[in-house]
Image (cartoon, rainbow, N blue to C red):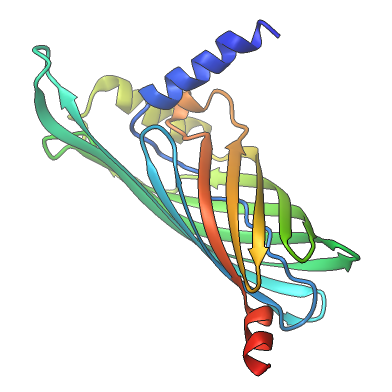
Length: 251
């Protein structure tokens, strides 16, 4: 068990020390859909030591065993960079988003579903290094995502493994930024596209038709700090199961 302590400490060091990001994972959504006409809308808000994230999701089953999914993700961080006297001299920030759509199939069993989704999306990550020095990178992501869900009257559990292909097709860079930050962007250009898995899950309490849930996603890309990738996202969310809402209204 002892070797895990320095590894965990190193993870915390990089999570806190790395402030500018070129990629941050959204949550792995596992919609609780069991039949044609089922649908879910959800909002999840997450954070790590330096960022705030908002994640919005909608899914619907227009046909038996088939579903579509739409995800929108936004992330932002802002901080002051001190000079050698320890006084704040300028503001730095990271801001990014992406929008993606997916389609897939699901197969219900007694207490939940297994499902497979395939999706694609695009967005951008904009880093402000202070004094109007900007890098603005476009990103595209393709993914395949098997999921497993379990549900009963009061509990929800979802697990998903998202297999990602991530690329950076274009962007603009101000070469006045620090050389070490330029080197990170050069590594992005050299090594793109990236292939890696993201493991995510959620568990929640269900109060018809609402679920309050906790979410976690881990991006298994090592070493993610070499590319300015955020490797973890933790959050709390609220979702609405539309089939229960409309059924309740009909009564």
